[in-house]
Length: 553
Image (cartoon, rainbow, N blue to C red; front, top):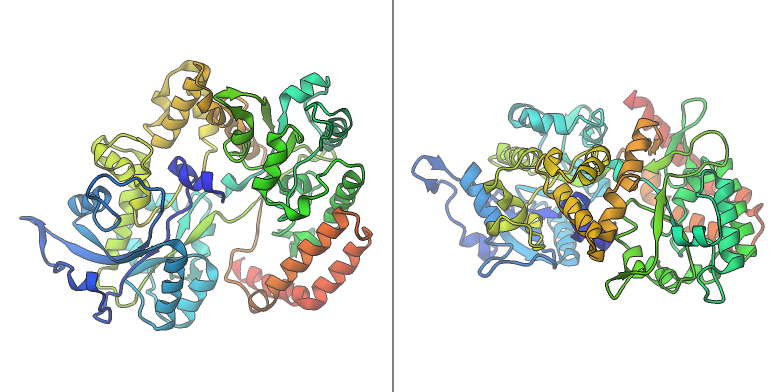
């Protein structure tokens, strides 16, 4: 996820890395030595339970005077409301925190609770028998709201944290639907060239041709489609491939119900051939292979590119920096659902929607307190009193862009994402009545920004493009209604072959795809790649994935 998604309203933010110090007496950190006794009281009738933690420190939180990650209004609120004192043993930047966590795991000196960044670290802890089976603890202490939160997706995310029926972690849930793809096009260029809005992939190809040949930006050279060296994601090709019913990088069901890897399917070859033809016709930046999205965005800002695939937030990052100059809107963009190459509607590929996992040490004396932290976060998300705004905004209670929500040690986000917002936000904007937004700070922030834009404040444009009727949230809702999500079917721990060979296979895939697109090799190289992919471990990996899948049925 890009920086804007991490630092704007918390609906976009990936859950913060939460690390903790050991519940046992093994830690000798100076901060831990100064910790108060866990039997001290917050008031005369409430015993305080202490959970020590170490944190990755977000650099963009604007702390109030006298506050820090060690002592802040959010931590104080958990102690006041729940009787749970969160104690940091250390606070480090993200790179240092990751290194320290790995050292803690290697030394078998893990904290009470902490987050791991994915299945690899989780599997290491499981294999070493270092973490607690949370099945009974979760069942007993999770609120009904929390249990409902984790079952909105049918329980898939929770299943990804289970081994042999045991719940060994809590998924840091997010919405898989927020990773869906959209097509963004310069609407002013369509109007200038008298081109229809895209309804099919054939329309997309025609627009790319016209944008290239007729130079609507007036710069002397335009390209039809943004692309960068990583190939996928924002300013990338996931949405383009999806228009050909190809789903690179994920596991999908074939006609026989078996799992197959999307990157090696025939549909992917068809899409690659079309991209090669576009490159040969000058419709793609010839230097894309050396550029990241920010660098490619320089061409967008220079009026040389007017069409791109990307996330629902693309108007905010990176398009906003190109579209708004000196507080004026200089580029008029529009967002569309993914067009299809044929009569079958295009589906957008999505992942599992998990940003990591919270685990609890087998030595933790109060694992129920970890569940209670989650309960409180879920409760506040659903309905927040004025005083509970402290969990998002700090002691001032108002959203002043300080990003205090990042101080929360565990954040799980709604699994249905912004699908409902695609209904409520446009309605609120049109009626100028935000009462239907359920006092959700994220949606209220978007509503306010959209209204400011309508009243002439250009800074709210990118929120308007997302939240307006027909905006990307509305399209996400339409995707849901039409069952147009293609979800990765593999959500287990990395298989042995994945651990050994996946990095090599991914690098080979990117190399071959790039050479094909740039016409440095024939499209027939794709078939050779598929054969080599299988020989290098892909065939064995596919067998392992299907063995895992059979156990999930």
